Image (cartoon, rainbow over all chains, first blue to last red; front, side):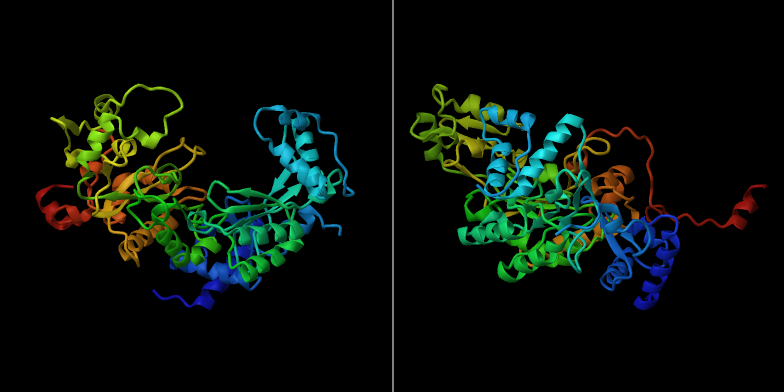
Length: 85
Length: 428
């Protein structure tokens, strides 16, 4: 079934924002639940587009990458402080 | 000397006393030339030795705009003591296939990294990338701009991405290579740009390409999908050269074991008796090989390179699922396709990759390597989704599971039953 990309992005964003209240970072597999009819590849492409638009953000440990919603959880600055120049 | 402050590091200094060049020496020398980052790094390392725990925090930022990998965020958890390494991010740079560099390029990279980072590098990381160690968040975009616009190179893979594909030196310098490993590596890098730069998978995925079964890039031990060159026809034999090895005119292993006197070359003891499938023998003064029994161990070819060479009908063996020992121990790749032609544009191979990726993306658990998925779901299931016909070479050991699981398509009539017809014959 063809899924409209904008609709899919909206679903992912709503799902992630709701989930982020309890768990600020999520795996790509968690996002699959936002649209069970969409394929993993479609979800991945839509989620990555949301990152490019600044509506989601990546969090990486170096070995694994997770997705977060900006404003939820600790920000880069809270966590690691700002650089003194 | 530049205005830098050296910390008191007695335990690190101890490491300089060994017989080998020490990383402490290297880092200290760099620091004393004016890089406080390097001296702070040694200071923090000393503190870690004292406390017996790391003082790095990692995770967070992952890259430059549009990329989901290539940068590994690192932060000191004692920034007050070592302010110059408060942020000390690592950047991975995609190495050229087989790591052919020009000195002009290396100079440019080092100059850029001296200017924008700590000046420290690691050539190379385990995956094969050039590793640029230690920079601050505000320098990430400028470094990326310089790399892509001035040096025409790209960031490598990190996180849940396809990792930078790696290959051996291949046909560029090796007469045994059955594959153009560099072309394959480059083609895969270009084809899978999206997967390399943006997280697509439950965990990391690695391609490695070795030109022959010597597997100099250790693809079978390290990659989720190992591409290893092989041949279909017979090992080429030059009987005159065989005689020259026996007669001592040619040195075995190309003279590699000349450090002491091992005595005269004994072809029976050093080659024939060591063949794992016992498929070689001497017929008079001629060496014979039962090629259909050859398992491509490469030993005879390595010992007598002028007499024996791989065949000319070449392609690759594809194996899947190697991994390091995080869960369930380390495992080597398992055979998937015994022989596949590897000629551009590699459509047959890429079809295979698409099938296994779709399966992994759908069923793989978070942080589950591809090899662990095969282990969890069974080799049968892997072969079914990859549309590969089971062959004896896929069998690792006699079965320990007595059950046979059939697919519906394999059973006459499928799973559907007419309940009314059944009840007509059997009371409820």
